[in-house]
Length: 226
Length: 235
Image (tube, rainbow over all chains, first blue to last red; front, side, top):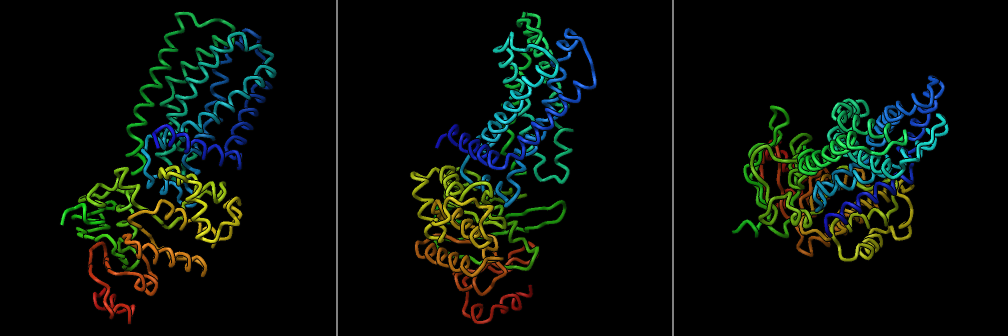
């Protein structure tokens, strides 16, 4: 069985388990929608101000709500010592990591996709003018977030305070990815195309993903064996 | 004898938990077909040694090889079945989904067929589509046995396999282990259930505070008096 099929088997298992319990997606989605709602009551910005703030607002919501999904990535293996069976199985640690990251990525992406229309309604903003470039940014930034989150989910899986430790470890490392995502999202929600000036942020996002994905795939075996 | 002819070979294995040596200079050669009861008091290092053999933990010093290969090699892991303290099955999946998952991860040619065969052997065929979270404790334990044996491993590593099993699960496990012995598979099991273990074992390894106190054939004295071993070796 090749690497990709093993990863897809792990991803399918995680998604099936999540669909049956809906633990992570329900918590994350509810949290994201509540923050969006509270922000909409708390401030009364003009449309231009809101467009300028949109990237920051959305990505802070995604980062906070996403941590609830990422926390579950390896924590779902704790009951019944399931992680032992996965580590003992003849699959590469990198395939296990990739499968788990894929499942978390899909859950995060779904949560984000639901948030965008809600954001548009609460803040009365049309955000679809640059729909496909916006989706590209969403995919790239979400993958960066997922890779860092999945790595630290593996690292903190046996910690008692992992729900607190994960955000503390993930957010500082995510700063370059978050900055790029905020800048690009604001530009695209404002309906402006990706001009050469902001393309540097896109390159940063791609570079961030390549570096951290490679590092995670190489290091995950050592992380899992402790 | 070449390394490849030894099923499990431990060479000068040490493991430290902080400064405390949980295993001290373990030397062990288990031949194919042998069934080894790994005995010792709580904290003697049985689980630690089994986890290193299973590739779930790394040795501080020394090496463990299975049929001459490092335990973390993928082909080696394919030949090893592990049944640990936890049942290692997913509550949110059905019995067949659990076995199918591990069948795929172990690269079985027909995961569905193997899963169904093992569900029958463990008496779970009528509950194949039931979610594990709805299973009784005994059913979960039998499914765990099916999961560990699904890929027909050459080496079986069992950590206290009889602990907390119900009567039916004990019968299933004993049957599966007897058959594994007849098929020439190598078994290493840690246990406190001396009677069940010595009944099955061809050899005994006794750990005492991380050191191997005895390794050799199971003798009639051990079978006649299960406490004899601990008294004789002052454990």
